[in-house]
Length: 355
Ligand SMILES: Nc1ncnc2c1ncn2[C@@H]1O[C@H](COP(=O)(O)OP(=O)(O)OP(=O)(O)O)[C@@H](O)[C@H]1O
Image 1 (tube, rainbow, N blue to C red):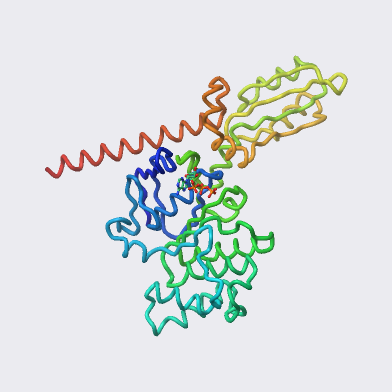
Image 2: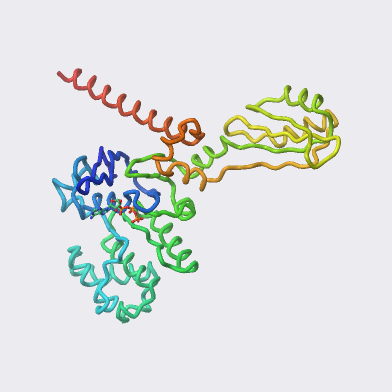
């Protein structure tokens, strides 16, 4: 549906978007996640044709946004960070104005407007001046103008910024309901927002794509660095012998317990994507060493996001402290490079074949 290839945007000396490539498939909700200044709005503005790229290509349903802007833009409804609404118009007047701009056939305009107002639940406000609406309702009007004409792709830049918790839930539900008929891309710097509504997450930092996967797979990534802490009644030797017989333990440390007598504190690092709590329970019971305490330190999606988007300067300062996720990120980028090389090679082979 959307293909972004090697997209670059420079503002003078500042590189805001740095060689971004990704594909958006039909009928899913994509979350564009990154801290402030990561380049989300700049990318969205390029996809929607608001600003030109420095280099790279964007294809919307096969149409290049710069070469065939009209056909490409027809497929997109856009809600920028600041909703483009006019305070002195009523909701209905404004939506009529937008429907004219979008060249919706005259005979369909009023029925489309009524439908969209119904969808975003602003029918009761249709004769109110936009300037007298609350921020939440104004956002709904912005959403209505993006949906009007039923474009295939709807792009929403920080759609819930500045809304209260109730309005946030309502707008999120609305976004989820759009998936039935549209492909949705939304940008946010709030991880919980993106993981609550999106099927796929693209994380960007300093204008670069640092990870892209389903929320579940990103959470699985977090599982990789789980550590389990247990306090067990028994001797170091017995516990160690029992742990040696177990699978899926990457490493463990055993020391005399600081809180309990005749007991040891054990820190276990597990193999990626495994949860060994039950196995540990049964093993310790087998060797008659009762577990007095067990605690799993699970790394959250939040941690992954923070690590992946952390200032890259700091990373260079302390290369020896390169974390699990940074290694994962490098793995992800290497894999992407390999895939790109394979595609290029395949292309070369096909070209050679056609000669
Ligand atoms: N018109 C502009 N001229 C110069 N620099 C710009 C311009 N627009 C954006 N930038 C810079 O480009 C970088 C990316 O900005 P962008 O607005 O795309 O980030 P963002 O991820 O959307 O952040 P936010 O969530 O704060 O809007 C930032 O460093 C910003 O200061």
